[in-house]
Image (cartoon, rainbow, N blue to C red; front, side, top):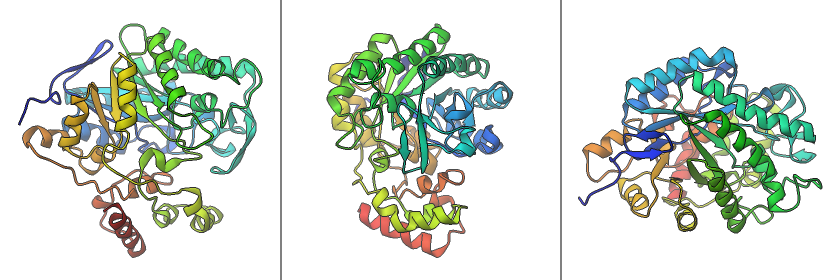
Length: 408
């Protein structure tokens, strides 16, 4: 086998990883009471032991209003000891530890957020569903400071890196996208104005991160639908983030409130998703209309690769490729194309020691079949691979088999 970059060290700002693999910041749903649990500890320790260069906890809200779910991290002083326990375990396995921070904006409910959900503009989010209030200017400045203050907790908890979530239709992305930003002040209109909130957040984060915490930003390459941001505007966002001085970008795409499967690809198993829902009205509403609300997007391995190449040509800073990597062949292809790192989520849920197996075997593919049970389940319970479940109801088994056939 020709020389590969995969198991060579790689650098992100002040941080050097033992190899080029990162456990992507995919929501685990393992945080009862918005705090870390033994389940979250066990999962990230197992991924670190499985050989990954860095594992990323996701998604940590910088304020209570940024929570999407009751089983999601809320970054606050009282959970720091629990987070420190996790980072110590990751470091004991010789891996680096990162945490994704963000704010969900309009993807919440009053009962979870503690207030009416906020966004760039007032409106109604059908996907939550909820009424949404546009942020006042004084709130915008305070929210940016919340991103910066969270870095003090990130450092205290022992993380080596932070990933700021500026994609997927969450709050920063809601300011960036003309689909959700209809403001008429200096935060709306032109792309320069729509980037203003992002710029404020990133500057606060960089100031607090100083020279000992790597700062990564997850961003969209496209929103994934006609009235959202397309690649040309997103390239400008990438150039601005490079100019601001972030250490690396994670290149993704999609909008969870408009084009959710553009992020993950494949079919959403609607029955599996609703099986775990507690609200009867939501359960049956999604079963009736879920196919229209969550249309399928064809899955193919390395599905963001062509768009990501355009960013590689335009930017000089380290780029982290994410999206549909399940084989050593495609991982090497991505690294050989000039990307410094590769990130995986579903592959490492299916097989936490996938990285070690790639090290020990030349030709390898993990067992993930992208039927998306893990994603369907995470809205109500912890993320889990269906291949690790022994008691799935027959309707779920049949649905997953149908999705497997559709994926080819």
